[in-house]
Image (cartoon, rainbow, N blue to C red; front, top):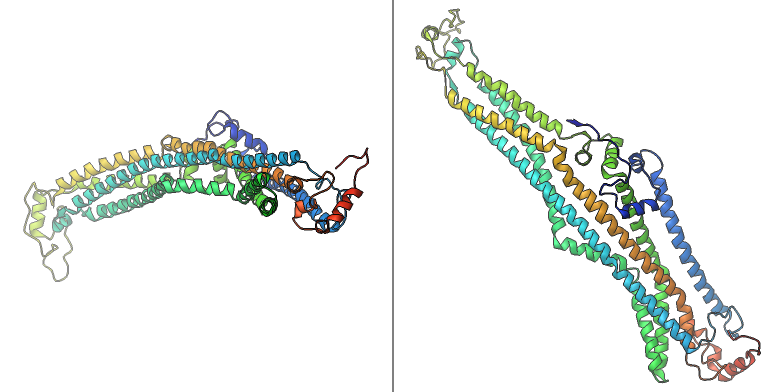
Amino acid sequence: MATPRPAATPPCDADPPCTETVESLWGMGSQPEDPDVVVGAEGSYDMDMTTLMATVIAIGVILLLVHACFRLGLCCKHFACKGKPIQKKCCPCVEKKCCKRQALILKIALALILVGVVLSLLSYTAGSDRIGAAVEDVADAMKQLEVILGRLQQILGNMVNSVTDMTVGVNGIACDANAMLLAGKTDPTPDIVADLTKTNTTIATMKQSIYDMKSDVEKYRKRAEDPQVQDMINYAIALMVSLPFIIYILTTCLGVACTACRSVMPEGKVKKMSKNCAWCHLNTGACWAGGPGLILALVIFVALFIVSIALADFCYVGPGPVMLAAARDNNETSALTYYLECAGENPMAKDVDAMAAAVANLTDATASLTSLPTCDANLDTALQLCTHDVNMNLLEVPSGATSACTPSHTAGCVIGDPVCANVPAADTAVTTSVASLLASVADIKADVLNCTKFQPIIETAFHDGVCTEAVAGLYYIWQVVAAAGVFTYIGIWLVPFATAAFKQEGGGVVGVADTDPEKGIFGDQSEYDETGKLMEAAAVADQPEADEPVL
């Protein structure tokens, strides 16, 4: 049963799939408006998406390489300048003497950045809730679909029962073979039973299809409603957004804590240990974040970003038109597409029409029950002779036999009685069952072939579940990853300056550094730490002139 395609509507009209989030994400991509473009039948949608992904990856890689070059430069400078006065060589901007206020500012900055990373990650719950709502919408649609399929299964079960009743009734007909022979009639019951068997097979096939479909729907619905599935979704999202940053967060927390402890500790070994603790944890966190951490975050961000863009394009153009274009491009007929868009050919119409034709054949076949002969004078006479039929035409008598009748022949019949027994009961069963079958076929056509029954259910799953909730959830999640990545990137740039400032904090003599400033970054000892005289001499030699600013 074909349904005319509805009039085309402009992309992103007032329909539910086109939300503000969908429209925003659609604007970030290649902005397709034709369903054939989205499915790849026309245009270069795949290439456009690949270009977009490559662009995003390139930006992220460039930012990481810039930071890596900066850190590499610091390492090269450390080894190239070892044993030389650092204050005026090799770009001393990082190792400049810092007063306590500068160190305090850097401590606060690192703490604020750390808070920003944590708060960004905690915002994942907004996206997680939307993903959970999408699963609930899909589960609700599955539940409604399960109800309709259950009703169809019940109708088909009633049809099987009706065919069974007809079969029992027809098999109960007992015809006198001799009387049927002499009357020139053929016993119709074998043909009727064969038609009933064929009809029953057709109905059973469709019943099994509906049963399998209902079983799948029930299985998916139970999974979607399972609290463990919801918990797994929440845990998986939390792990995905936190995995790239958890080591950075922990090490930076420990590093900031060590600097805080150092500020209140007296001079001694414990304070020296707190200095090394701060240096170690801050640099470990920066190494993780600047390497595998942000690389992993970039991979997660790109994956979520591209998927959300693709879903937004799918929803912007419309789930129905896109799926219909995909089915048309693959020369397939999809039941899901038909029920979502109410266009094209219903793939289940063939099975329903075959079942309706089988029921119609039963109506024609059972009509022969009303034409079964009854005993009259001619038939009674013919039965007594068993040599001529009712029209007194000579019958062929088998060789060696005395008559054309079978050994079960009994002379004559009761005039007025039917030749076949139990016909009225069979006729009643057939009439009732055929009426029930025709009503069932009408109900199935009204449900299965009626797009308006399924369309609201499918729309709930796609429009509300996928296009509203799932798209928004992905959008929020990759924003969380991006925000945490930005805070982390700023934080790893501050670490070299912060560690240098923390190591130089608390100098006792103006113009004389307590430790080699390079130790603030790399944590090692230099020849200046070994000989106080050399340190003092270097400091005096490097005293700035009156008009020379102190770095």
